Image (cartoon, rainbow, N blue to C red; front, side, top):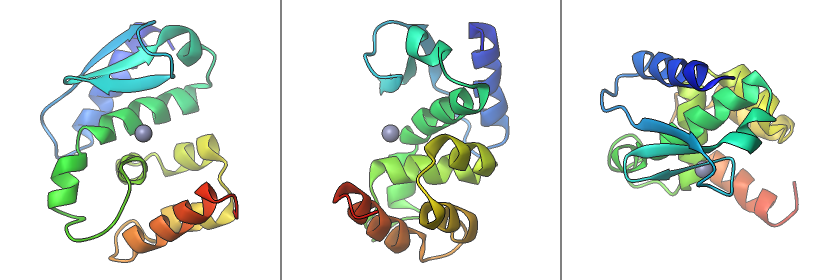
Length: 141
Ligand SMILES: [Zn+2]
């Protein structure tokens, strides 16, 4: 993906969403991880990002973009629920239509895939994904 294509991806993702404040995208070598956020910018590590498939590149940008919406989602859709910031960012990635890309990139297994497929719209998403994530962090799944 070229820088221009990455910008186009961000713009495409923004137009699929009800959110109107667009983060800017910076592709350089500032981040040691493939992606991250600072201020109101998404930073992408050019070398690491370039080694990913187009599918994974799209997921990285969408996930990082989802992090900007954490606070809104914590105070809105997920109010009173326990859910980690990474799972909010993944939920957002799925929610804007990148379900197939997310599952293909994560390769977390059938349970994660099922939660992403079936529970995006309903109350149980936070509790199910949090239980799964705790077991994943413990090395159980
Ligand atoms: Zn994250």
